[in-house]
Image 1: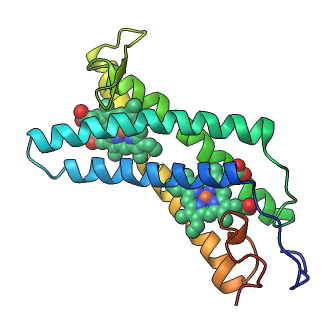
Image 2: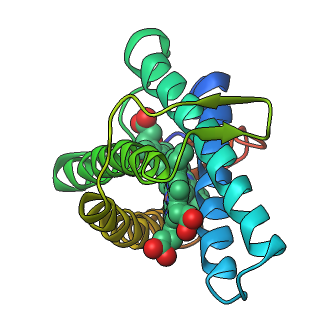
Length: 188
Ligand code: HEM
Ligand code: HEM
């Protein structure tokens, strides 16, 4: 982090980027938690219901992620980088990796779902499969969807720890870029 004027208001992302970032984070953690919880449950209404909610929230994540990538690349207000040199490159690589893995996860999720039928959004509408997926391919897709989920949770966890280290150890303004509440004050 470069030297800061403690009285200056640090730059933050625009409201759309911030709202879409936190919506993505909530959806990813909820999708993962649902899958982990239903894996401990016996087959039945509860686990079926959780799987349907997982698919519906997965469709929502696809929309949020699409909007987020569109906004970030076309409309978002550019802000100066928070760090320089190697640290900046590492943060950029981490963000790009998260975007790429999330896109893969959404594609794998839809394919996995279509292996068994259309993707239904809370009973309101359904998205039928545009392709035929065989049983062997579906097993592979499920395998990749499962391990990619762990990769995303691991990277996102590391990313969150780094953001908290910036805030509580380095005491700079990186976290305020995504949570601009109280950003006029220097972190204590
Ligand atoms: C970051 C987002 C996501 C995460 C972290 C995630 C995570 C998981 C995990 C851990 C499983 C269990 C896999 C297994 O035990 O083999 C699973 C299953 C599944 N996911 Fe996702 N998923 C995500 C997004 C999606 C999306 C976007 C869709 C489709 C719209 C989707 C559809 C499915 C389906 C159909 C299953 C199998 C359900 C069943 O067993 O019947 N997922 N997901
Ligand atoms: C599943 C959870 C999460 C995912 C997938 C995720 C993903 C991302 C991505 C892709 C970016 C890059 C934004 C861009 O430039 O377009 C970003 C930025 C950021 N995230 Fe997260 N994030 C998650 C959770 C968190 C959490 C829990 C925190 C805080 C504890 C956090 C703090 C930040 C901050 C401060 C930035 C801005 C960093 C900078 O400007 O250099 N994120 N996040």
